[in-house]
Amino acid sequence: MRHVDFSPLYRSTVGFDRLFTMLDSLAQPDGAQTYPPYNIERTGEDSYRISMAVAGFSDEEISIEAHRNVLTVKGERKEEGNGEGSELLYRGIASRAFERRFQLADHVDVVGATLKNGLLFVDLKRNIPEELKPRKIAITASSGKAKQIEAKTAA
Image 1 (cartoon, helix red, strand yellow):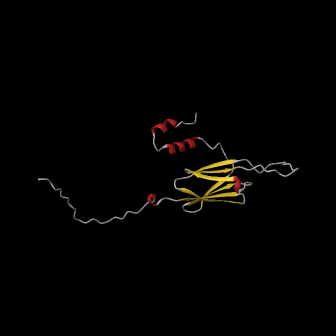
Image 2: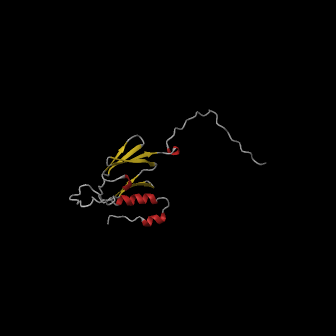
Image 3: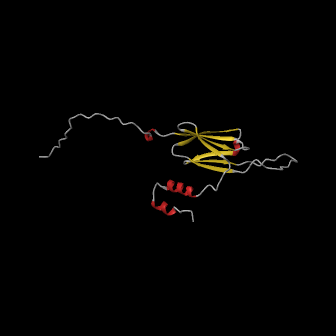
């Protein structure tokens, strides 16, 4: 048994359900999914690009959805006839449907997607809110004299 059941922990914890979902997804491999092949590259300090080889798919047959730090790319080809009287002798171009999921880090947003020459490019950008960025704290010199607080007592 390689699968660990985290469901009893959901009842006794608050706010950790995302952590358990991530641990659960790590325990279940993708099933050695290799289609379609993809690259992930860093294009700038806070920008990334996912490139997927989706030859034969049009932009209407591909859907991209980002929801709760998961980017899902789905492709489903419509059946197309080869024309009257034609017969397919060999299929070397894959036409199977696919669904590929990418786990995104916090504050990573999908900027856009383009399809060019059989490659799907999904651009990502990390936008860290100002309150989460490190900030410099200025050190001020204190006066040599300490302030004394006097308490009034009732007589």
